[in-house]
Amino acid sequence: MSEIIWILIAVAALAAGYAVAMAISKNMAKSRANSIIDDARREAEVIKEKKILEAKEQEMQLLNEAEKVSNQKMQKLQTTEARLKQRELQLNQQQSDLAKRKNELDTLKTNIDNQTQELEKKNVEVDKMHKEAQETLEHISGLSAEEAKEKLIDSLKDEARSAAASYINDIMDDAKMTANKEAKRIVIQSIQRVATETAVENSVTVFHIENDEIKGRIIGREGRNIRALEAATGIEIIVDDTPEAIVLSGFDPVRREIARLALHQLVADGRIHPARIEEVVAKVRRQVEEEIIETGKRTAIDLGIHGLHPELIRMVGKMKYRSSYGQNLLQHSRETANLCAVMASELGLNPKKARRAGLLHDIGKVPDDEPELPHAILGMKLAEKFKEKPEICNAIGAHHDEIEQTSLLAPIVQVCDAISGARPGARREIVEAYIKRLNDLEQLALSYPGVIKTYAIQAGRELRVIVGAEKISDVETEQLSAEIAKKIQDEMTYPGQVKITVIRETRAVSFAK
Image (tube, rainbow, N blue to C red; front, side, top):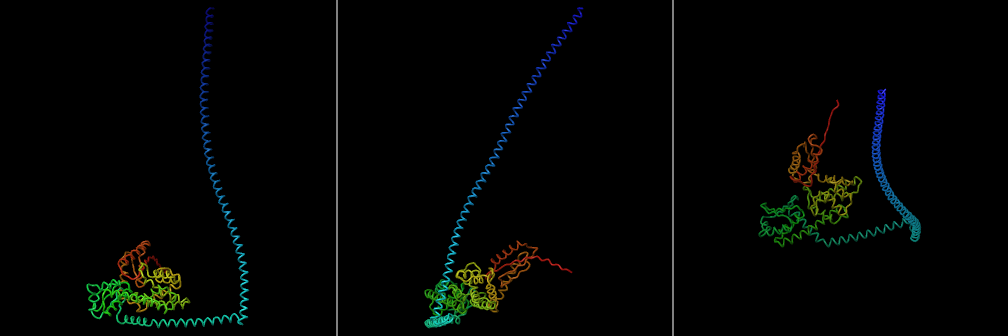
């Protein structure tokens, strides 16, 4: 019994211990669960706050970006608005100006209309008054308008005849007064042509003397006379062993002529000393200047050319003392002028203009200065300077193709110039020297690599160079042309200018059989 009680007590103790243990275990689990829940809550709160902060930062960033974009759009809108306002102001100003101009035009139109009406009224009144005056005159004179016109023309003809007769009488009186002077001039010309010979006028003139004793007198004591003569004339005087001849050397033919005439007078007079030399040279220079002007006037009169500038007349007179390839320049110009007139008449053009252009086409060969220009271009500039008509200036400048021909006179002058120069015997040039110069031109161009053939044409004024297409390119042809021109300019002596034309072509030839 007691054992059962003890067993029960033990079981009860065990049950109680188990219950206590379970209670304790339950409390501990509950406490642990609460701790885990609290930790989870705290972590959730932290995460929540972190997410809230991130959301706020993103919100702020988005707000800033939106504000930035909004400011940019606002700025663009403001700029566009300002531009539109400026454009509006400009349009308003333009409209105002247009309205103002329209008002002015309307006012001007009104004034013009009024003036037109007044003019029409005045024209009607004038016509009426003219008709009345004509009727009155016809009534008074008893003549019609046509009859009165014929009478007036007859009276003017009579007046012109009387004026012409008076003018002729004045000319005759003047001729009688100057007959002595003219006779002396003719005698001097005769002496010049008969007493002395003149060589080909290039750069030297040979003055012939009767004996060599005169050479010593021309030289003078210690060379005083010859130095005075050279200083006064600007011409080099060569006294050498050539029998009965003194050489006058200089490029200016007028100066050479003055020196020749002065020497002739000094030798004929016998008084040769520095003072006498200066006196004679000054006198001869005045005579030559008068002769030049007189020659120019006479040439213009003979050719029927009027209204030439006095300076052009003087230059025409200077042509007498200038030669081109041995052909007297004045004679050449006269021939060209006459040929131009004939050709222009046949073509229905103005022969007077053609004759004028033909006479002046080589005026650039006798300038007072020596500019570095082709004579055709220089002549054109001189003609323009002295108020010649544009078609005449173009004909002068284009007769050697330096400029484009814009008038019908230009080809006529070019052709007639060539005809006059090509006339047999017109130009005296040593044939051997001429042929040698042409051969030298051709050989000089042939010395360059790639050149196949060369042709000197237009009396040596143009050089045609044919090159191989496979040896030289188009760019190299330009260089070759410039090199040949420079070499000719440096190494050769030639009149005028030489045109170099380099020709390069490629040909493909096939035959269909």
